[in-house]
Image 1 (cartoon, rainbow, N blue to C red):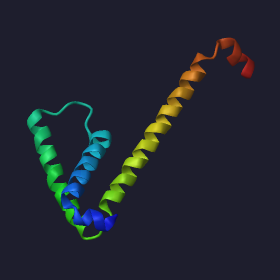
Image 2 (tube, rainbow, N blue to C red; image 1 turned 180 degrees about the vertical axis):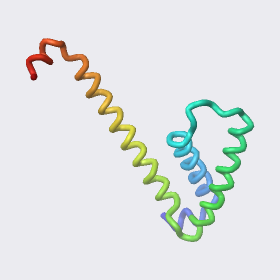
Image 3 (spheres, helix red, strand yellow; image 1 turned 120 degrees about the horizontal axis):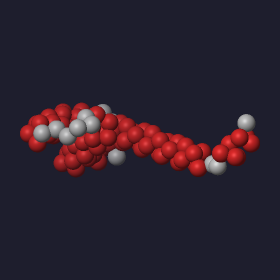
Length: 103
């Protein structure tokens, strides 16, 4: 896979940029919306950074694989939060009489 990615730099660049943008949007984005020009500058800087990561990818460092691991871990955390929220909702739906009986 590493050889194929190093022989197809355009596809590798797009994959790297999409994964970097996803990680930024899910982890580092501020709560409030940025002005359009700041958002554009941010994505231009991410594109430049993605190009640097592409150079490392072509030099046989596993950049795409590491980004995929990061996205996988983020998905695991998101699933965990979803399950915890369902459990809390289920606990809150238990009638008060049953709660007293459990003590």
